[in-house]
Length: 169
Figure 1 (cartoon, rainbow, N blue to C red):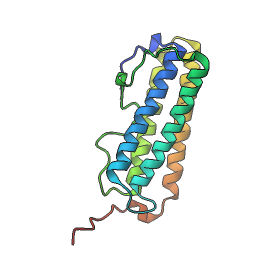
Figure 2: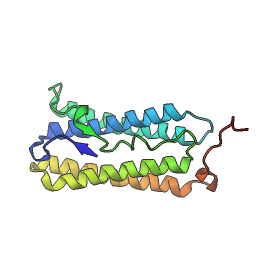
Figure 3: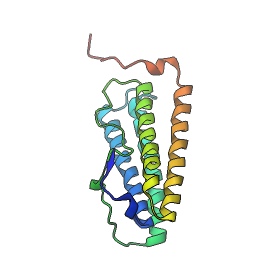
Figure 4: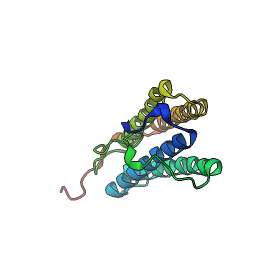
């Protein structure tokens, strides 16, 4: 997980751009996972990744709208290339036959990674409005962790079973 930005010099606009791009990266990664794995059952890893992509897009859109309301179309200084794996799930995490439980665990690790990013960034933040935003985002990531943990707790035992290769026989 990394961001090539100087946290101590972030303005509120920069921080909103950074947070929005973190969500964009996670959306793109979950979308890629969902498309790569596909859907074979009504509740499988591919479907779960697709639902996580929807959640990440929604959160990213909310942050982008907030940024537009405050700063209009002022050009961003932070780019997608400036971040890597801040919240996005690990590139090598999925497998074609992974269980729904394993998919949930991948998402849980990603949410924990995002929480850790904002938590670690806070001591370096100098501006009060940026600090407040990062505290808010850290709390939202804590809520996302609880959401995924609640999903895991409700999974049936069959959700832990990896899918079998239909062509194996």
